[in-house]
Image (cartoon, rainbow, N blue to C red; front, side, top):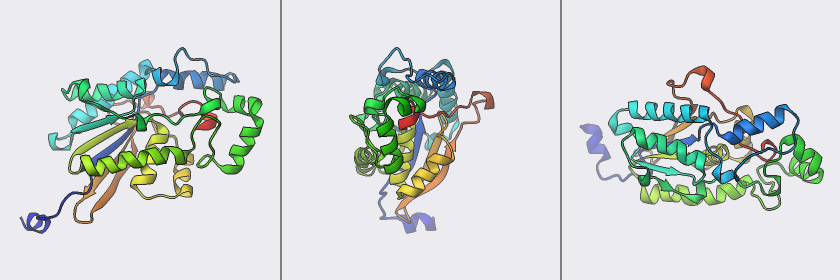
Length: 257
C-alpha cells in the first residue's frame, strides 16, 4: 500500500512492457543459406522480399512463441501488437494473436517496421556483392554498415530515423499497455539502439556478437518511479522451442545486413 501511495499521481511515460521480436525463419533465410553454402552469388526466391513467407520451421517457431506468450499471466500478455507489413512478420504475429484468441485484424501493421531496404544489393550473397559490386563492397567496408547506404537502399541510420516515430508512438499512444513489436533482425537491433540509448559502437558490437534468433524476444519493463525502461532480457528463445529448431541466420542478403 505504501508503494501505491508513493506512485499515486505519477503517469506512465512508456508501455508497461515491450517485447521486440524477430519473425520466425523465412523461406528467404533458407534460400540464403543454400546460396552461401554453394557459392551462388544471387539468392533465388519466388517472391519479392515483402512477400517471402515463413518456412515450415518458421511456422513451428511462431507457434512456440505463441504458446510461450499464452502461458504468461494474463496481466503480462500483449495487449497491443505492432507488426511489419512483410508476410513473414505478419504470419509470426498472427500466430500469437490466434493463440491469445484475438482476430488478426486487431494487429497494427506499421510500414516503419519493415525490413531494411537493400537497394541494388537485394538478393546478393556476401560473395556475390564482392564479385558484382566491388566498389560498393569497399565503400561499405570503409564507411561501416551503420552509415553505409547502398544505391536505392537504406543505412542503419535511415532505419533508426523511421523507428524514432514508432518509439514516439509507443509513448504517446500506448503508455501503460503491454506491447509486442514484431519485425526483423535490423529492426530489433535498431530498436535496442533507441530504447537503450546506445551508440554506434555498442549496437554494432551487439550485432557482431550474435544474430538475433528467429522468434527471439528482447523484453523491457517500465519503471514509473525512474520514468524509464529497464532491459529485462535479450534474444530470449521460448523454451517451448526445442534446441534443434532454434535458428538465427541473418536476414538476406548477408552482405548488406
